[in-house]
Length: 254
Image (cartoon, rainbow, N blue to C red):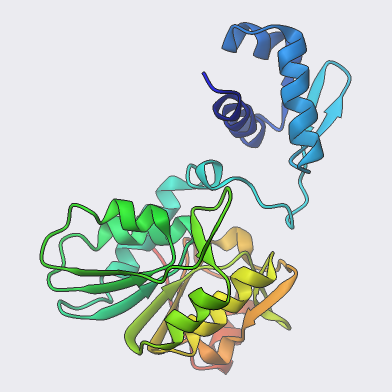
C-alpha cells in the first residue's frame, strides 16, 4: 500500500470516528508505529489532523480542504439523492456545465441515462466517469491541474468557460452563508464558479445541508444568481424564507 493511500484511509477513519490510535493503526495496516506517527505528522502539517497522546483527532476546521478521494466518500447516500434530483432537471440534448466538486461526480453518474448531452467540465474525475458514454459531446476546459483535487483551474480554465453559453450550470460549493452567499475555500475555485454562473441560462446549486451557515475564503456568487437549489434535507424556515426572497426554488428528498 502506498503511503498516500494509507494516509487517505487514516483520514477516512478520522472522519468517521473523530480520533485514531497509533497502535491500532499499526496493526490495521501492518506497518510500524513509527510509520504511522510519520503519517500523522504529515496529516497534521496539512492541517487535516491534530496529534494527541498516542494518536490523533480530526481537525474540525471547516476551512480545511480534505483530499478529493476522501470527500467523495462522505455523505454518499445524500449525494446520490441530490444527484437524482439534479439529473431530473436536465433534458435530452441539453448543454451543461459540471464543476469539479465531488457532488458533481454523482450528478454525472445520474445523468448517464440521458441522450445527446453536451457536458463541459473542469473535472478530471467527471471526464473519466463519462469516458464510456456514447452519443454525448464531452468537453474539457483545460487549464492547470490542481494537485489533490483532480480539477483544472486558472485563467485559461475561466477563459474557456466564458467562451460557452449553456442551458444549465450544475455546481456545488464549500459553504453557504445568508450574508456572503456562495463561498469557496480557494480563490481559484471561486473564480471558476463565477465564470460558470455567468455563462449559463439556468443555475442549479447542489449542496448538502452541512454547508449551510458556513463561511469560506472566496465569494463565488450570490443567491440572487441561483435559480434552483438542491439539498439533502428540508431546510430550516430561516433558509426557506431566504430562498423565497430571491425566488429560488428549493428541492430536497421527501
